[in-house]
Length: 346
Image (cartoon, rainbow, N blue to C red; front, side, top):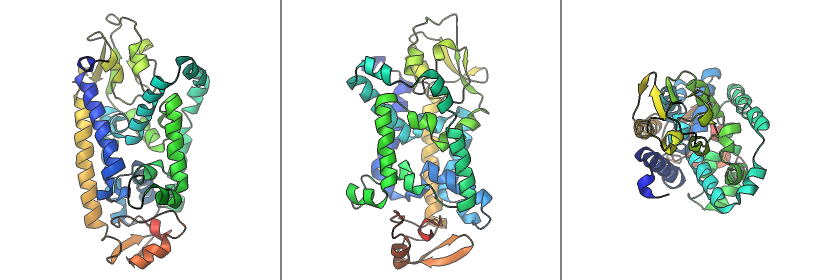
């Protein structure tokens, strides 16, 4: 595809996703990984809600604030975090595009999950969501850390190198690479079938006034919109896209060759195509700064300097010896700054 045919909104979306991915892979070490991990914020929010021993300071830690900001944003622009910011989604789309270039189309069709099975599997992320809520209340903290693919993604290019990071937390890395391998053959499987944060944003998107609308009189029936959708929604045969599977990414709108055949509406009003990706970038960047600030100011001091963490009602000093001893065998190597999440205590 020639660059001149790529619409500005699509370029901005890809630029935002690329920036987010580069940040998570290479630069996220400037803040605690638990201040920006989507699943971490999700876990800690429900830990704070249900676990009475969890402190108010912990409930309003940076990662929870970022999670809440993106939750509100998803009510406005549907699953905007998934569609415009999530680096895991970006990597899955990238690997899917590579797969389309490398694999024969006949093989891809044979590997495609049957439509009926696909519909059933898409419900699986909701029991996963329910399990996260229940286990956060029962166990508190980052109970999922040993299989959290975001932790693996943020640790690949950090510190002691890949081998050491893998040995600390093999489950996370195995799951992370399995997600990418699946995406190479069949696209955003993690988003469709497993991600609890995606399920949460999907539920919130039911409240959103934002939706894609197809003008049947202008539609040429080319089906490019359906083929462009990263969630495999059959946009070409819908008058309005109201399914919670929609990421609000507007890939369908950007792929449409007929002006006005597809549009993104907020209620009855058309919204500019570039508004959602620019707003997503601004909101996430602002939320990240706020989350980082809150984590560094309210969560204690860097490990090894005698900061304090408060977890399950227990306030204690955190020294380098404490961290080394408490993280032995847990697969956790410590944060750059303590936010009282309690992982090292577990």
